Length: 442
Ligand SMILES: *Cc1c(COP(=O)(O)O)cnc(C)c1O
Image 1 (cartoon, helix red, strand yellow):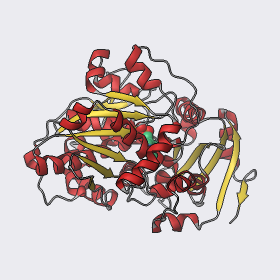
Image 2 (cartoon, rainbow, N blue to C red; image 1 turned 60 degrees about the horizontal axis):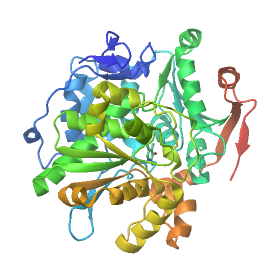
Image 3 (tube, protein in one colour; image 1 turned 90 degrees about the horizontal axis):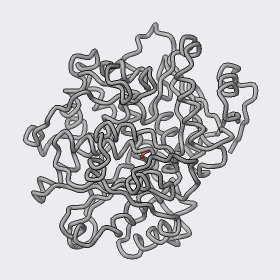
Image 4 (cartoon, protein in one colour; image 1 turned 90 degrees about the vertical axis):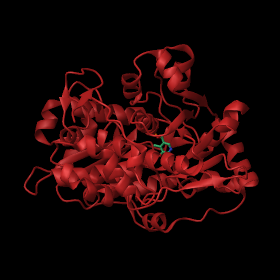
């Protein structure tokens, strides 16, 4: 299959090529040029997540050098579960837990798939590839974990200084080796802008080949369709009804993956986007004006995005505003409502939710009752609450148990360099080596 740029549809690339490039040469994002239709019947109850992934993604890799390794790639990437856990007594509500991977957030799925693919595309003798990743929290950790120790690949993680939680920062800066971390004096949008600028800089690209591991990379998004496939098929088998998803959204990668899964023919009904106070997308649906803005800091910090990149993929999928409006609905949830929902989720359902998951739970609570009652709703839980224990523990009044994978990361020493939010500073820091590096121990 070919993938086309969201800007110039004549610009196309094959699967491996699109993954290696990250961003299309015109600055657009790659999206499938066609939509194979999957038959629910071709999946079986006994399929593991990895097997579901190999079947679902086969048409996209068809004809590419990676096609033959796809079953090994999905086996390597999806080696932890994504259970759908029923909530409450009426059985109409469930949570899709996407936080059982090595860094306890859904981004492990995409990052591990991309790493498994790029690791196979790079022959042993190739120039080292530098993966740039801008992160508002979870991406950097997931990408660092997925690529750490892979030969022929270097990773540069950029995060906004002071705007990620202490727990988040630990897992962005604890790697060393082929992974380097940069605290940017600016916002997440500045970090994302730096990555895009670096890509469009031809000299730089020639000197050291770059790729992106943000959700602008197709290799992050496509694998995310797999857990929507598995979850919707599980609901459909159990209840004979299509599943509706509430997706905590920032850069819109996870939401687009859900919409792609629906376009592929999976049994998915409604898709509701739960945004924090960064309300660019809900406002766009209301007014029809796309007005990106500076991101503001919220409790659900991994969704603090004022200019979501994947809007380009949403608009490519639904060119008319009226189509977008019927494809999705969106809610804005402020910090007070997030706090209250974390508390009530614990008191009423015994659930300990991270702030992002609580945003989805609150959006669900705001749906008109008839939509709630007539659907099979699945709240997408994007991170383990232990990653946000500074926020969650005071609200529920008890400690949150830390999963073993995270505890191991927290025990490692931290190291990062601080840079200004401009391309020259970044370039210097990356090429100068480690002279200016700030070290934090303990
Ligand atoms: C990244 C992230 C989100 C937002 O996902 P997008 O694909 O950027 O919309 C939500 N929750 C958590 C925990 C995240 O890490």
